Length: 553
Image 1 (cartoon, rainbow, N blue to C red):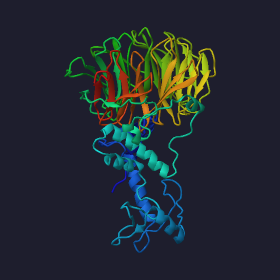
Image 2 (image 1 turned 180 degrees about the vertical axis):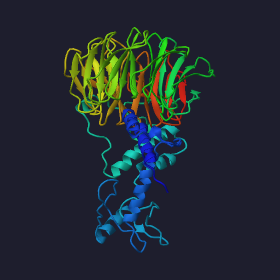
Image 3 (image 1 turned 45 degrees about the horizontal axis):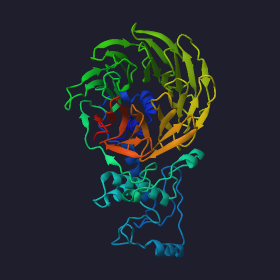
Image 4 (image 1 turned 45 degrees about the vertical axis):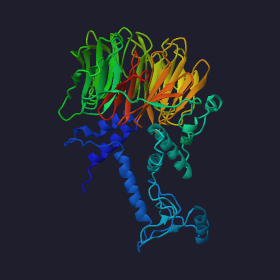
């Protein structure tokens, strides 16, 4: 057996990316230089690092509690991956009393102890500390008349039940906003057994699965990004870990081969994951950026217009101004570049952040904001080398920012679990939204200027919809079983789509908070985008892209 540091680093990198820590995974990949390995990376399945750790933990558990004569030592203390394990043995009388209530532990044919119900034990605690496996068994045991999606929700409930049995707090603290504003609901009888299948569901509304979709194949690496052309709703751009972006025409039931936009690495030993793509508002140009820092401008027909050269560091976000002439790029080295695309030149470079820049967004054609891992947000103006304002208040990395369509408000999402609303005339937030129990990764404004409603998604597995004018949480959308890190509103603002690495895209009715439809993919979801004419595009980790219309399927 050979244990290579490159292999360990690669598994850590994959874990970070699969968990939604995209910025952290880029930084780790850059610092560990795993892209310079002399071997081609294996096709590692999602969750490999966790499975390896679980198997190692099980082995340590057995090794620690195995007596010299081969019998198991009775121990009631939980076995953890971190910290020193100290065995705790209950008196025999207490064990007998507990066993009379819970089922006797017996030994058959010299094998390890089993409960009378047949479940494996190791002393007083379960050998395999894996609530997910319990959830899967629970889902498989469901009656065949229950749909696969309800069974999946039952599995989610089994995780909660199993965790509760181990005295694990899975829900986090409830905020005053959630206590006052979350809706009381009646869950339909067919879904009542699933526990928390829908927190915002209305009585009598059942979830429907989307069983018809157009699958786009061609990428050879996980697809990270997708974006619809704003002027041609049947044209879709995608970016993946194979070093290519692609332009697809999905107007036909069987699309033609896509236009392949290839990024060449500066050196042969560098990887070229596509890290950002962006159509200009007019839909005439597509900007693409790679992990190596290469930026390219393409026409809608796929012709290379120009290559923008700045630094050989990952570009994690790009944004066009409304005129479609200036392009912002945010880099992991803390710099922001402003490009004059028609001239193909670097107009300005901004370097005031002391941490990796996570996101940028335009307020108008000349004013923009940036956020970074240094916990700050800065507002800039074209031509001014110093920020107009520096907004402080977050206690963790600021992952995403977005201006309201009117430009009156700026929303920010952070690792501190909060969503903050800012005014461009103040250095402190005007509203702090609490409720998420883990990092808030992304946000989107409802596409209507007369309202100020913003949605956020979090690693706590929920999406929340907030009303800025009323200073309240309107909806808590809870059905995902893993971190949620992408979302998109329909063009009319009636529906919200959320994507997670639980392989689900959930489509929610914003009016009543009900789960409208669900799409199940074969792998984790990296991105969801909603076209102006109803179709949703889904970037999937298995190298595929799915396109479907939730309103007609």
